[in-house]
Amino acid sequence: MRDELTPKSDDLDVLLDAALSTYANPQPSLGLTARILAATRAAAPLRQFPWMLWAIPAIAALLAVVILLPARHIYRDPLPSAVQLSGSTSTIPVAEPSSVKTGQVREAPRSRATAAVRAATPVPEPLPKQKVFPTPAPLSPEEQALAAAVNRNLEGVARQVAQSAVPSPEQPVEPLHIAAIHIPLLNPPDNNN
Amino acid sequence: MVSKDVAEFEALVARQSHFVFRVAYAILRNRHDAEDAVQEIFLKLYRHHTWSGINDERAFLARAAWRVALDRLSKSDRLPKQQSVDESEHEPRSMFPSPEQQAIAASQQNAVHRMIDSLPEELRQPLVLSAIDELNSREIAAILGLPEGTVRTRIMRARQMLKQKLAGTMEKSYAR
Image (tube, rainbow over the protein chains, first blue to last red):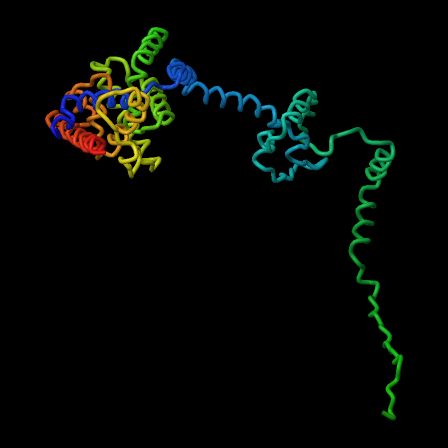
């Protein structure tokens, strides 16, 4: 009786195979294939165009250079690099930074708007450098009269200048007398205390 | 050339995505996780262009799915199956179908599924793979990285354990 009720091995195999078929063969949700293909298409550009891996950073760097280049302000130094006294052959060199020597001054990058305005503004042509400072100019009438008077009595003028500069030994130099200074006390001390 | 590759890849996805899903599902036992794993597998294949020139694409994809699923399982710290299975709650009541038994056929299959879940992993995995799209023992051995003889032995042991459990539960139901 018990043997009849005991399930046979073949029946168990059938039951087990049926359960395994449903256990191991679930169906994915609808659209799995489409989702996979969509994900691969999203990744497709890099796969289909491998040169983009290096081209994109290169283009970005080029754009950055193009954008930032106008921000670098270039101008020439309006001041002469050396000062030469009028009527003198000696020159006084002026210490210059290296950037000034090259005529370019580097500035910190500014905003795009500032750079655009600077690029649109015409830069005036710098004046030519002068070897003599100040710039030679014709003498005024007063200067011409002074120069003529000096030329006429050059020796007399020189003597007068020398006399005014050096004290003559004939004139005795009197010593200075400084009077004694007496400063009264504002509040005399109280002797009673 | 590129469009030809894309067409071949799309054909591969259409041909094998369900198979890869089943292999991943055998490990993960979760539909959403398995679908994510399938998507990850095909995306890696496409990016690295490793899908062209495969000799046995089923074995290759099954092994890739197996590795990705195991990796996801280890990262998620989630067990693929229920730890404790109370078989008495889901034991099949009879071997022979009756109207009532047919009505509860779905719950019977769930009971067997729980028994499969309760198997040790080293036995469950080859058993489940053997039920996926008729993978043979050689392919399963390639997927699991085991000798073919070991795979056959484990499948036999798994089936034997399941049959013993089924027989025991059925005898209990007959005795009632």
